[in-house]
Length: 389
Image (cartoon, rainbow, N blue to C red; front, side, top):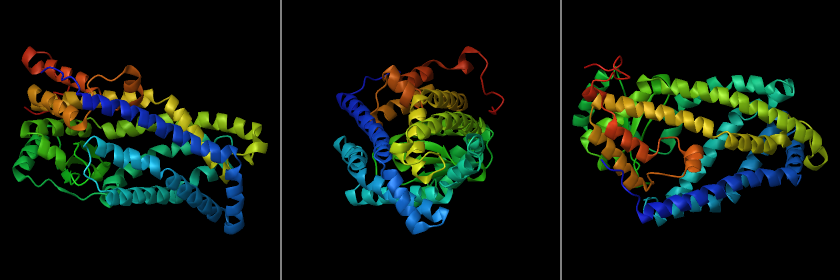
């Protein structure tokens, strides 16, 4: 199957998306930098200390004030990116009221998380100013496991209603396919996303017993049965190949390195700019914008590393889905439809791919689907040990 050329609409969407993303990244850097270097963070900390008196209450008051300020001043930019822009390209069904409700809910979830565990790094820095990065980094793996476990059970239901797949005929075929792929008791859910979007998606979420495959209802309506079975085969590949565990292990190692770099840079800046910043230690509550700024800058600089690892895992899942279904045409067509419905372009620039793409490009995936058929050529399959005849 030939890789389709992107439409003029898709190209416009792609280029405007890049400008928009650049503006959001610049904004995310600019806000904490201004709060930090104007001395506002130190004044906010002093206000919180006067009202809170106890350390945690001081932290909570500071975090709530900072969070409300950030979410309010970011509202126009986020409204354009999340509501106006998708409507301009015919990709959204959301009303403004629903978007604002979801935005407020998302802000509430973030603030709840910050108040629950955001204080931990600061306490660790106070206890161990030299090795805090190591201790906080070691907490990354259990924290990511807990977050992955809770996401489908606690967070996702706040925004959308998930239910077991309603198409019983398709469900029975999925159960049979899962049995061939060595997955017992696999859980497949559908979620009503058509009230928000016209695009389509499917993904694996959860960890351990909370793990499940989730299909958007738009995906169920847009793909035929063979295409859906390939998509599900791809998601089953994530299950069987233990990609969630690999993601967490890899991310935990990167977080450890990131925190060490933040430690070195942060201590240097806190000591050098003490008069301007109003603090001289990263354990000071007023140092929160500095930590956020450095984490974001270091993460952006190193982003190609996790993106490359993610693309590798997604390619493995594509291979697994093909070996399970052996339907090259359906697999390729699912990506053709992805390009059409999501207005993505098949061959983005190399910089865009390296920094932004968690998946192989559409062109790479279609070309792989066109050529990979070891069951025909007599070559050994990669995952024959996992797949029953």
